[in-house]
Structure formats: structure tokens, C-alpha cells
Picture 1: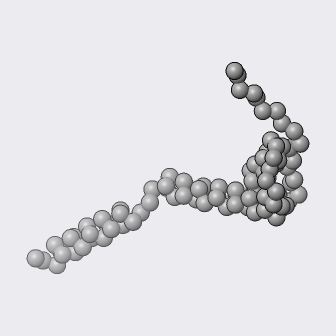
Picture 2: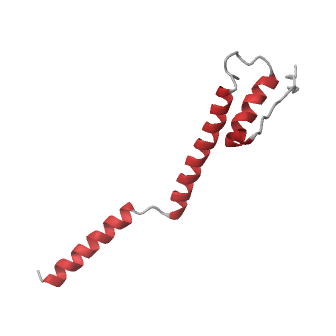
Length: 95
């Protein structure tokens, strides 16, 4: 085999490896968005824990709503956002 033939085969192998390792842009963006969402909700749940929302079992809809909104607010909790749900009406099941 000539030098040129070896080089072409090696170049083809390198290209194949690069194609295997390369991620399409949408997969990279999707991965980064997933990481951002996990960090966002993690910060919200950490704020809920720091506010002692989990020390007593939530008994009504307002308590559950407050925990949910706190988790949804994420890092905004550390900028002064303090979401509260005082009352909520759940629909009654039909007989």
C-alpha cells in the first residue's frame, strides 16, 4: 500500500471518529436546557426547605400551592420573591 493510500484510510477513520463524537447542535441545546431546568427547580426547592415548608406536612391546597410556586420561582426566591397562596378552591368530584 502506498503512503497516499494509508493517509486516505487514516483520514477516513479520523472523520468517522469525529462524526461519532460530534453532537448535533439541537442535542447540545437540549442538554443545556435540561441542566438549567434542574438547577432552577433545585434552587426553588432549596428555598422551600430553607423556609421550613417541609417541617410540617402541608394540610391544605394553599400550603401545597405555596411550595409549588416557591419551586417554580427558582432562584428568584433569593432576589426577594416570596410567593404565597392563601386559599384555593379545588373542584369537587361529580357524583
